[in-house]
Image (tube, rainbow, N blue to C red; front, top):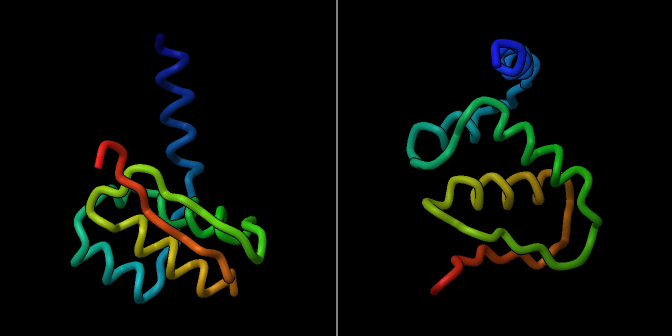
Length: 89
């Protein structure tokens, strides 16, 4: 148990975060899950997306991730049809 706790702690130290003016502003005004590394992970995912196609975000809560995804898709020149989907609605 102590080893797994130590591993999780070490992994949190390795998590990189991304921040620019818009991301900082979003964290101030848009509630949602904005934990350390989340913006960097979404930025990396959009870098790896194909240039064209369709993308779905399953489980949009407050729109924080939706705003990040559309921002980074625009930043990386992705021409993807994108739609957040809320299960059960």
